[in-house]
Image (cartoon, rainbow, N blue to C red; front, side, top):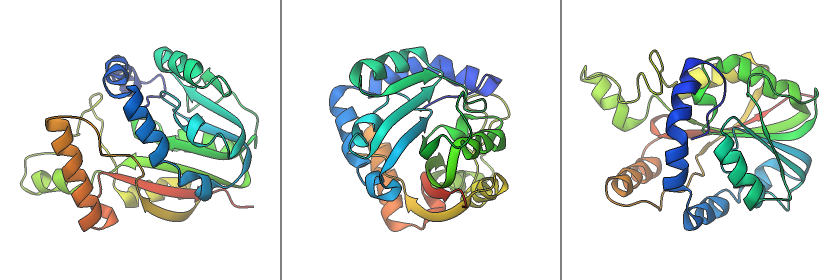
Length: 238
């Protein structure tokens, strides 16, 4: 999880993130993430400058090091930025709010945002900032959590509520693919493609491993609208 912004949602998530960083991003798990996202090299293509908005521990700097001449990661969590700077000294990392990016208009050829946009209270504002810093014709790859996830939709239909509501703070809820697409288009983007998420699921133990196995099966057997995480390739029109 990558948290961005200064609103109450981000503040609540920020308290949780450092422990998650220590627990999940051990070397073997980081290696799996680096390898799993290799298809991004082709989806984004060669780029002079790539921004990872909500970069977390910065593993995409490794995945995309042969694709991007310059890689920039932005996040609000000091611990994750310190880790990223140590692991990937060839890249640049900075503390930044995704809704107020400290970059020039049309500075980047490509942008990534993995599990960061859902933790923004002002999602459209964040998307407009990404659009602003992206060059015309540039691509943006995003992965976002889906409120239509099969294991959440069933309890909702039974009147039991949604497991992810009010997390990381009161009033929070995830969006479904249609709602996300409306936001992307509202910010000016064209949705070029939709994909199953690249996020690896072959790690963890106990209940986490069981959760990942269920997510994997649903991703293989059910349509995009029922996946846990949905991926979109966006383009800024020329």
